[in-house]
Length: 358
Ligand SMILES: [Zn+2]
Image (cartoon, rainbow, N blue to C red; front, side):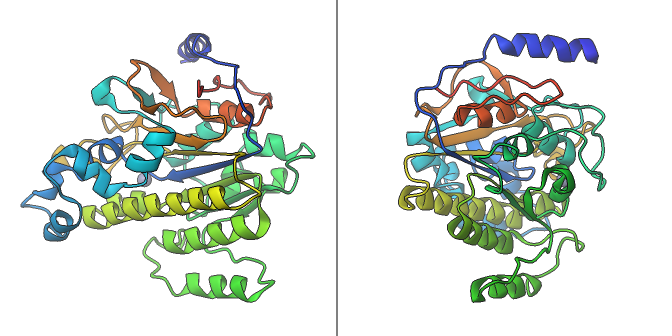
């Protein structure tokens, strides 16, 4: 394993680009947990839309997300991706075109995926979703130690593991995850705190619904103007595990709309306008539509290491849907975040090289 990892680092270095035309002052990252590349590039899955054995509402899916061509289906499901993002940014991971994005870690589930994304280190010893404070340093923690980012770094997520993944005890980063409340300093915060309690507790107490998380994230961005911000949405993974493809697709569509809202905020708020990069990805893939594989992920599920990523904004060239026959890894995002900001991410562990965004 060690030899493989070293070879991977050497190989990827060849693709590393250190040249960026324009530096961003802020970076916002959005991740949708376990959202397959198949739905991003194909839209609603034809097999699952018409599966006569399905227990979810096929009629609803067909009415809401079905269209005759893949191109139309993906535009229906993720309209922001296939209008604004594809014309002004990039979308990577369409394996039909030979462009691949993968997990470099060998586990293909959440904590290892978020660890890889934000530490740049596909650490095989991070092998569970247990509430363990991350021993590895994230790029957020690293930059939060610098004066320019101190206290301007925040994480808002649906799943209550982010306070551990970003090691809030050690890093001092603001983390609002699970059903955590805002401090309640004004009427809006009190309203958001109350509202999240009235949403269905579908996910066993540890995870609030994305509608509440997204509302808190939008409020936080407008109120506090963090320079480094991560929004993590979890409905996609939860509904897929439950086999509810109708709600899974709804979750994808809603996420697309919230990303659009964030992009519109970036375009309209003088704090962010013209100086902010937005990166979007997922922590892991899932199995194929056949045999119910789409519900699951993990190293026993073939193809669950196949993911995607996208980006738009300052420092990111408009390259559209990528067709380069190359493979990139989610672990390259950590160094990319630093490089977009004109910094270098140099923690104690090895880091995969930054992505080529120009
Ligand atoms: Zn999962």
